[in-house]
Length: 141
Image 1 (cartoon, one colour):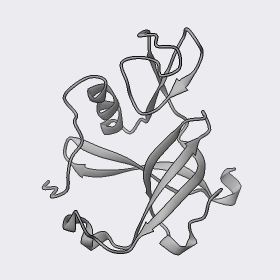
Image 2 (tube, rainbow, N blue to C red; image 1 turned 180 degrees about the horizontal axis):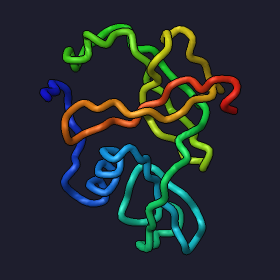
Image 3 (cartoon, rainbow, N blue to C red; image 1 turned 135 degrees about the vertical axis):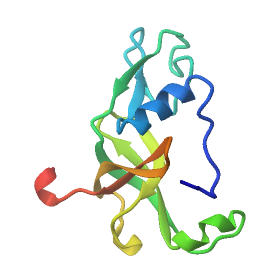
């Protein structure tokens, strides 16, 4: 499977653990046993207390759109032209962290702040699945 867009660093820690879980269909965030905080994006230390005793926990995969933008024009990365328009959003997970991602499986103009979303994965290569979010049905809340 060929993918012509930029790819994330999947070789060094803590990124390798995160992307390996995504490949398995799981979204991991980090938890600090010292200060009981959760964080995202992956780091080797706690951004709240500095501890290096970070643990991985699996996120539920549900949350709400915190803020978003609709990309309607490709400038720097023309490889994304075929996806225009698309939504780039910060989704606040139930666990309290925010993840920068795409909202998919809906018309971009229907996305709004506070919209309930759920995790889905976009398999872009044989070794890589990207976490994205789609609208949750009203009965899923």
